Image (cartoon, rainbow, N blue to C red; front, side):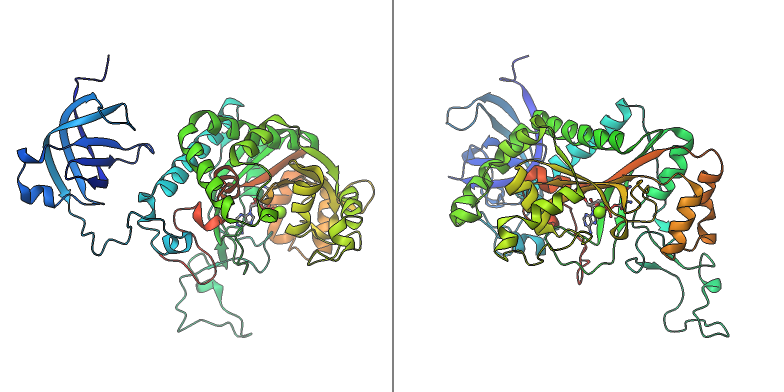
Length: 466
Ligand code: 4AD
Ligand code: MG
């Protein structure tokens, strides 16, 4: 049916009002506004006066082919109702360009801008296509706990969960905090990862994934870290490191392709926005590729796979290393890679996404499978342009004796983790998994430069507003 001539009802917020006649209305469903044409002679002057940027209104009218340029259709307003006035003299969002820093301070209102509504529609589309990807492949969505009694992964970087009265902390005779009196009768924290629980389920259900909030109390004030972020953690039985890398690469390509298809308008808007910003930057800081090119490039190219050892060689001999341009010079095998090194490999050396494998065991977690060389573990990190690490994963150590020994070496409380070790005692099998940082993915796809701008209400050191 042709839309012209139809009578429709619309509700939304006024984005602009000009010539006392044209209202640009947006209901959040898309970037585009609907133009309402108001014949002001037909309405009370007092009603017309109340229409301002931000006002919530309802209108009934007839869709007609637009006379003006800029839109195909417009609405000839027959009735107009105001739900909520918006006093322009105090409304923080003015019809002009605001800085990202300012908008972060008014995160409760920033959804109403084109940029943030585009970001959060894309965020939704990404989440949806992640579930779709796993569902199509026969994975089961597992809800791992948010409150955890194990401190296996993030020693020292966890948020304590307690109902103890901080003014009257109970102590044992030995002078330790008496967690027996706490809610769970033991110390508990917010989870840093759902992996260990996902492993338990994968060794029965075969293929599972988690998608939930995770928490890290590390004091990383960077554009890539949050204290509360969402992570996707698939875990697959009967799989090795290659299967793990294939799954991660397929997932990333699938969701990026799906957003390229389903969020064209929002992506184009963010692409154009970035092009504008790039013009302000000095030549040497500009992105070599535009947002849409980066996304297509990522979908169309095989990710480069190489070992940590080879990466160290490349970095050692790199120009920035020789010219002492790295903040952390690369000298010895065994040191952890910094974001500057990861980005050099991806952006300068290979110029495409890179998967690094077989890291030194001393810089990786206890559960990673030990390689024959006794020095490295079957770990993999996926590095993305502009982001650095977007995925971290590994094949898991499925051999009970090796796992126990490694846990003892790393001072992991073996007795407390007996539930985890049970999977290795009873029908263990090769298995692997990874964690994809959801906000890092949204950051890459939207081309934004700060992770605080791709989650509705960011939590970071010193800030838990809203
Ligand atoms: O590399 P990470 O720490 O790996 C794990 O937690 C494993 N348990 C995953 C697994 O094998 N199941 O974290 C995984 C990813 C990182 O690659 C990064 O994308 C993201 O989570 N991430 C963060 N994102 C935002 N803010 C932070 N503070 C993050 N820390 C990690
Ligand atoms: Mg990692």
